[in-house]
Length: 346
Image (cartoon, rainbow, N blue to C red; front, side):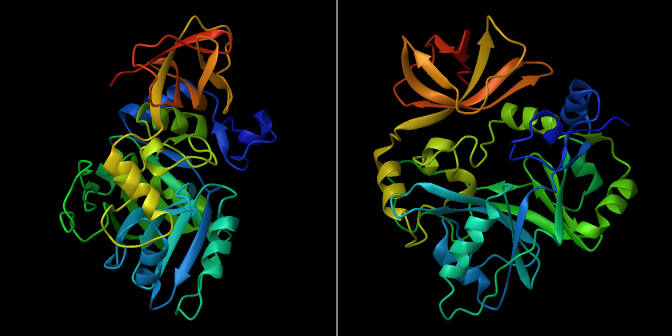
């Protein structure tokens, strides 16, 4: 099997350490879109939070309602700046004794530093568990068939701008079913099933599953198609949760005080975040290579946003997630480098 690592193609990539593809990226995409494939995402950082008070502690520090998160449940959370900007995004998986937080490669250092700073006298012991746990993802419609006992992800509908206090249910806005698997955990998520397994057992788990492997390029194409944002790709230092479509999965709008809450509440009740996440389709492509992250998106020679993740999709062609100013019309003719782009109105 041909294995091309991310760092072989881009030595400076934050995604170094995993396979970009296994010789045929388009075939790998089709596998993830129509059946099931396994993607090695073991470059993700993992933080372990054991301790009797972990649920209530994480509840007070983050955007998610976690005080009643029980064993064998998962969710998503954000850590915001005092001004409401997104600093951290993580999946949380509870096993009954420890809350496992997995986040973007390189982001674990900042997340752990914040958690340690906020311990005070709370009975928690956060630690870096990246060397212990590897994240693997089963992606595609067939992933659920491999774990039929895991219920579909449950997401609470985002309320309108003016909702009454107490209207929202007192639980996490996203709830992901979890069960034990090969000495680790399996977590049902919108794109399939994530596996948090002992790093030493990663190869054995991959062999036992016997599922075709797909590289990170294929995973990213599916993620972009489903408009799933990624910390550091579809966010910058100014991003607030509503701009990156992170409210439904990671923010409880009526759970009480947390850092940055005032900004979240004000923007939601006004109903007009300054920017929005969109899917772009490219036309008149001037290059075979997708534009890099951060490439300006222009309208009439004026920058109105930036490219987050651009990919070549097996059916849709060249597409990208981009963050644009709110007032850019859906039918605007946009320019990215030498190429034209249009917003997918869906």
